[in-house]
Length: 249
Picture: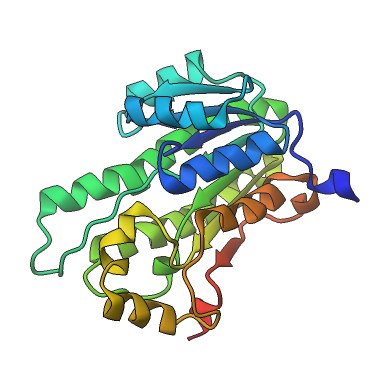
């Protein structure tokens, strides 16, 4: 039974690897025995993260994954052909009302949150299809189904990721590639540190969550390992909410 949940021997690519969530996801995969190509555009952040991971089973690749040619080079040169898992984790947040959302900033967010995820999924699929197996786990958000004020671009992007996941599941399921997504709720990261620093705002956020607290980034590791493992061999096109019950409020 334990082997069902094992990722030992798998080869994975994790984007956004230098961020709070990315670092934890990479560490979790390494702890499970996987080999990981950790990708981020922040070379210094990757170097610092690599010191934390301290593993000979991780390689780092600084890459702007919004650049189509750069992504194709990444998967041709830095990613083994025996790719088992892609974790599309890279993402950015913008807070602005619809009236104040500048189109240039909208496009910049979509480029990272949606375009880059598609480019990486396409490149990963090209490696996985000939092998007849593989798994893609996209990081969506509670914002994919719950309207959050001041985050019109972010919410839209995460809804796009959720539905892209479903379409990939439909298109690539016949080739043995499973596509699923994790939709976190309110996670304690640097991205929302400014909101958490305001006691009234932090309380307003956690009051919406039946568990009444923020999640820690490490709490996404278990769901990822499940979706990447043989235990999820018949799970395809699923959006797994890791939100403390936020979706039901």
